[in-house]
Length: 592
Image 1: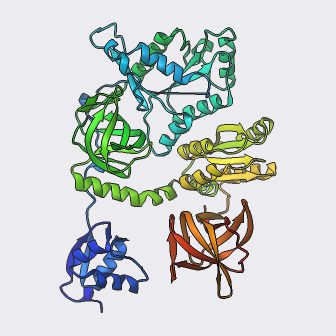
Image 2 (image 1 turned 180 degrees about the vertical axis):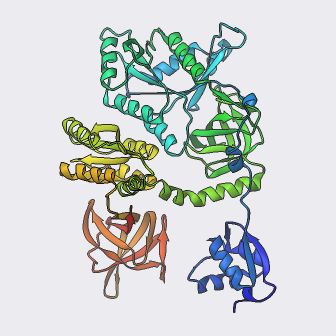
């Protein structure tokens, strides 16, 4: 009988995660006693290491306590669910993202709009770059109250979609910039697909109409071929001819933006704690972590306690897009905040917490849940097939990549014919060439599967796919590709055993040991565990595959080693090491 089973087991409330030291203080026993109890359960933990609630509760029970989980702190989580009454909502400026091909004049168009639509007294301050800014547009109904438009100056559709992949819905409208002399290019088509997948309205800005080679009519025809039917041809998408150089058409473009915003009836409640989204961040050498945030609801104030993703802090200072210090920021306003204890990621949601402890607890909780969140985001062809069979899913979203455009069109035609009355195959993007990071981010944001024919996956894309949980299928035989998609549509896909890469270690030195040689390594990323599967890579090619037979830190045997640490690794049936070899640790798991 354990101590907890005896009469009078003492109740204790424990947080979801806590260190060994925290647990010893909560139970009133020495850290040594806690460590001994953990060792009995096969858990090796130092005094400052974190243990999960289930482990802590079991240890507490063995020591005569009855543990209860601490209620999750209120604050940001509850406020995200808070609904606003209709009378609390007030009109807010639209938030616009500008996208397009790399050389079609996105930046020059943004600069022209900004220079034309700032107050004269601010003209010298327009060089401040914070990733977003507001411009004022004359209001004929009330000259004293100009209308405002917020522009997000993203590096491209990849950043736009990266925010969507993390659950952020910042943009109200996309302006697609197409050069009148160049026409639709591959990146233009990608931008169109990303905007459509986001489900937001789009306006086309046909730029560079001042050039002799400009041909706006050709651009409009190409847009139709890309399934973007403009208003002039009976569609719903406005197409505005502009010139960033001469500033022709800019007023017309802004008028259309405001018209679309008016139709969308954009509103927010300014009289509540702020919510927003981080669009970019950096660590300033003198001011520490800085984050550019679009406020979406409520009003952010100096001294507010905030949580942004896994970061938290107290707002010490705020700056607008002109570089001015401000004290409050309302809906649709871009603002730089200072005071976070770490740099958040683009797409992280920012909210106001009740107090510092609440903020710290929520940030810690999000940090611990990040891996689980990645797992839950994973979408595989087998999993979708199972959902289709169970009637939970009615759409199969695909991204198609092939070696040549002709193959792309043939495969697209074949898989789209597999759609039926119950399930629709939705090809959200196609392209010729290898699978890249942009494809992966679009797949993550749209819960899509990437299917490739006679193409490779770029290394950066493979790594990103592992992080985001995106399923990439590459085929060399076209009928196998079609067959797998057909099985998924019919709900017949069998689960497969997939490899999951755990970490990489670089061989820095070679040591003689009893019975052979071991590799002295630096762990580059992830984790390597004793007895995990491993392959030895040399020049990017696999030269041996077995498992990790020994793992040491200095002279001590250890169970695992994490990124940034040195270690000694032995691999079964292999000792032909060379400096520069890479050991890739991995495991297999069933998917679907």
